[in-house]
Image (cartoon, rainbow, N blue to C red; front, side, top):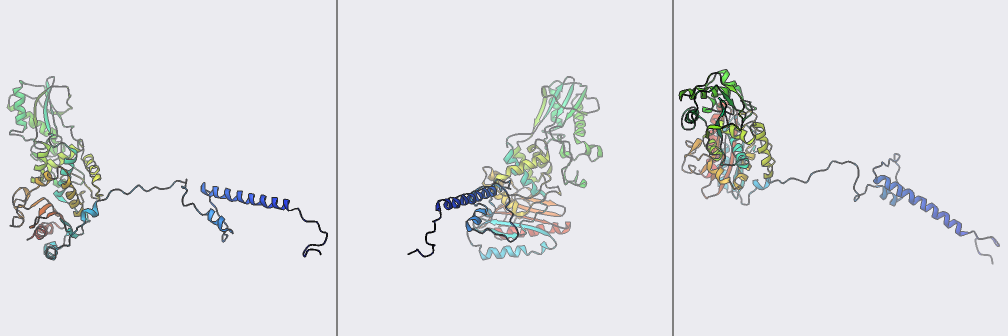
Length: 465
């Protein structure tokens, strides 16, 4: 009986040719798929008509961007996250006592804060940051800027090095080669007078001229952000040759070129010891091969830094900063900023000078406090702390915070500028805990001056009174 479905006697198709055809079609499809995927991985676009979609799930998966193969197209790479200690430095491990919290809150509500912008950050060992009022608000720090200069000096200078002022003999001329010494005086042991006497002892008589070489520092007599009225009332015009803080004269010629004016003063000092110098005194570089006939050196840089902090000395601050910068204020600031990067503080404050007179100086209390915390971890940290004025005892704090709970227990840098005040440093609580704090306030001059009492109230509250 004929098999169902096939006519009797019909010839069976040749299945071999059908199989080959199917295989060829499959190979063509596979090759097309591989080419498509390779094209996609090479960065080509696969723009399909609107609404179209792959009809095969495997093909759709192949067309999706690979999650493992790298994309060869240019991309913006993100650098590994830099170290960051900010949260660590703010954190505490113990609850803040209610009594301490109440004292701090009361101090922050002091009526003297009225009308002032303020930035407050106080950290207490164990408790963390116990006071934070606009802690990241950058304000004029006044002389707290000298803390940054001091940190930079410790990081970048040898504390034993000194500023050296020389007199060299060049033929029948003398060259006064300045070294940037901010402590040189007209008279006394460390002075132009002492230099002149040494020249005379060296057997120098009449000379044909005197040149002044003040190229150790850049020629700018002010820093970025200084205002004309500040010079010489609050700081002398800057120079590589500083005598009596460069505040002895206020005439325009001296303010424009104090080095030449100080050179003329040296010529007079030479005349006083019998060394005749014809006028005028001029600028001129010293040949390093010419012999030195007289020299004076400053105290070591470490000692000068302490003096700067204790007395809030603006001239020392600016000379130290320029020393850090090989004669340049801006280079000095850049080098300090770079040296602080490994501290992982991500500082955002701005600086214009080394003393705090500049209106380009802006930094928050929290940044000052963090810098002081990390500074204390350095090998020279205790030295920095000990160099600060002590409440009721020394420096600019000798007449301040002298009560029984604060005298001798607060070491901090004061800051006062027209329209602002600041206090940043260290303290010890009644139960022996370390305190690191910074309080900065800015405002109308009268209000800012009255705000100092509010700053002190915060310190007393934290220390325990």
